[in-house]
Amino acid sequence: MPSTDHRRATAERNAAAILDAAEGLLTRGAPSSMSAVAAAAGVSRVTLYAHFPTREALVEGVVTRVIDRAKAALEDARLDQGPALEALDRLTAIAWDHLDRGGGIARGAADVLTPAAMDRAHRALHEPIGALIARGQASGEFRDDLTVGWLLATYFALMHAAGDQLRAGALASEDAVGVLQPTLRSVFRKV
Image (cartoon, rainbow, N blue to C red; front, side, top):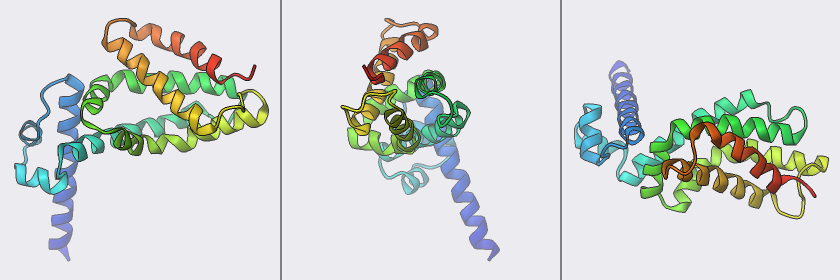
């Protein structure tokens, strides 16, 4: 049915435009109310609310989209190759690049999303990073006195803490990887 396909295509374009607009506003630190997002996307508020019934749902959609792009970039980190500590360093450099570019999104998300929503949005990264942690524990490189889940949570907490330090002016973007890599190594390394 051509009519159904046209409506679906229009709905998909609208959803993409809404996410693009919200991401752009959050990235710039601009006001990202539902009205501002609808205006920036060129859609009505009714259309916006049909796709994202709450601001939390909209921001979670933006964060999920950004994290999906980060997950695709993790393939370049080759987390399953070489010593686990070296893979952790590669992961940190790539992840920082994405977090640094998405700093406004991180700040906006932290203001809107609950910890459970942030966890849902980050879930796409749990598997590859968790697999790296498990591999490092199995090889004896990473500490095994803490669970994979705890080390995973620690990884995300430290990455976001660096983002907070950057936004507070206490850490320069170009220094972040040099701070994060030894910090994460010291947390993860088996002693």
